[in-house]
Amino acid sequence: MTGMSKILECVSNFSEGRNKDKMENIVNSFRGKDAVKLLDYQNDEDHNRMVVTVVGEPDALKDAVVEAIGAAVDNIDMTEHRGQHPRMGATDVVPFIPIRNVTMDEAIEVSKQVARQVAESYDLPVFLYEESASNPERKNLANVRKGQFEGMAEKLKTPGWEPDFGPTAVHPTAGITAVGARMPLVAYNVNLSTDRLDIADSKAKKVRHISGGLRYCKGMGVELKDRGIVQVSMNLTDYKKTALYRVFELIRIEAARYGVNIVGSEIIGLVPMEALIDTAVYYLGVEDFTMKQVLEARIME
Amino acid sequence: MTGMSKILECVSNFSEGRNKDKMENIVNSFRGKDAVKLLDYQNDEDHNRMVVTVVGEPDALKDAVVEAIGAAVDNIDMTEHRGQHPRMGATDVVPFIPIRNVTMDEAIEVSKQVARQVAESYDLPVFLYEESASNPERKNLANVRKGQFEGMAEKLKTPGWEPDFGPTAVHPTAGITAVGARMPLVAYNVNLSTDRLDIADSKAKKVRHISGGLRYCKGMGVELKDRGIVQVSMNLTDYKKTALYRVFELIRIEAARYGVNIVGSEIIGLVPMEALIDTAVYYLGVEDFTMKQVLEARIME
Picture 1 (cartoon, rainbow over the protein chains, first blue to last red):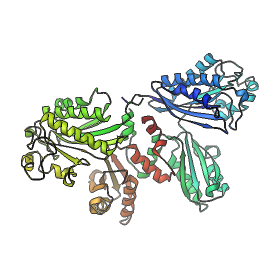
Picture 2: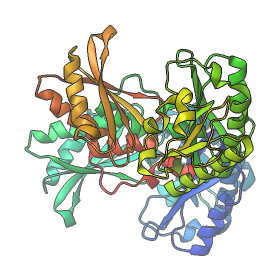
Picture 3: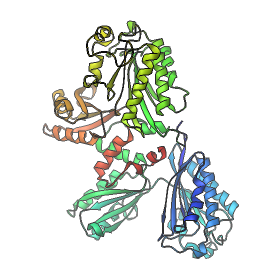
Picture 4: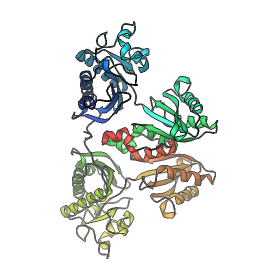
């Protein structure tokens, strides 16, 4: 009765953040479709980029995303694109994210079907990335996107950088697109009672994976000049394995060494309920709790 | 697309917990209906009672509940009912609970429509209780139910105890029913590192409303003999105003006075996601958080 028994999310990034008509032409692909729900779309004029958040049944979502990538091919000319954010195509990155009753394997399968279909329909080269990547080097989007639109013609000729689908040449106006699957990403920042950026940087180094910290945490120190404080700004790439409370408590005990306290934290954008419920269950020490006890989880079943 | 834009819950209590056919006849009223979803039903043989949890769009849910009360009139004979739980009718109590995009006023209105309709259709007297009560004395179910099935014929003749709807005489086999509206109830227990029941009782007295504690908290001490510990067993009758973390922290600081620690807690049955998310937001000190940031809340919109 709640319509969607399986829920997959897609957070597509398009290289158009200034022309309203063009943005609407793309977003319209997600409107008025059965079993597809447009949750949010936000453009950034400086980045000249738009991020569209959609959920849906896997098959219905797949079709809508293919349509939207077609609209981006029609509406965006990368040879004229200027913006601050790194980008390589009209549709820049398309991650599929399992939300409810969908496995990561199913999300990967959907990403590959979309990649194949847009390559064939629009003559667009596609890299698979993150969990869908065909080799370890392609997992990280930064590696995949290196060279950006302007450098891609050359990059595709480099051995090891053939696209996973589509021609071995960039699309003249739409460039190249990365399609993949990943866990939901939680943008989580912790604010500290100091204006010393070096302390925020040092905390970031202690919690983030790359420098010895938690496996699914990326992070860096950031100044909040208007508030006169600093923050540890993070992306948690798998909240099921690297929980919010663990990140928070680790920063707390590390900051204490400098006599610095946590003054608050921030969640940017959307967060799956389980990430916060898991945190509540930890602090309350709730025994034998399951997500099936959450009323809304039962309603959505 | 998620089917239900407004969600109302109903947790009906029926006085049949032993005869499977009769229970199924009642529960079937909630099956195969558009915009009605049966979440759970549990019977207790000692209590000879069944609790059915259903959600739905207000109008659809109303019709299904009226049908179920009719099935209970047809299937249950209160003159033969024996069980440990206090009860006064075949359908004993029917609370409507606003869950999503439904106000308490709307829930009250639905409860009154159901009360009027079952009174007319089945010649059944009905008391309104909790938020729907027609006077303060009828708010508390214990007051309303006092005298139970056997004492109701007499009670209805007492000035001030006329039913809100229906005849001023008990239904010969179905007795009398209480219909009302209330907030979701969270059954929350906190376990203490001691086997002394007097300490659990003392903590219960400190947190519960009736003895000077938190406004929407009821509670008592309970022994968990198999674990050799005690617990403060509570009902939180409005988690939005009396938050779980506040109850938990209050018990923690009161127990500390005896050198007793909290060893864990329990949530019994279903809990609205907001009750736990609110708790996570407190412990992480999340700034400017809104429920609109919760992915599932957005999907259900």
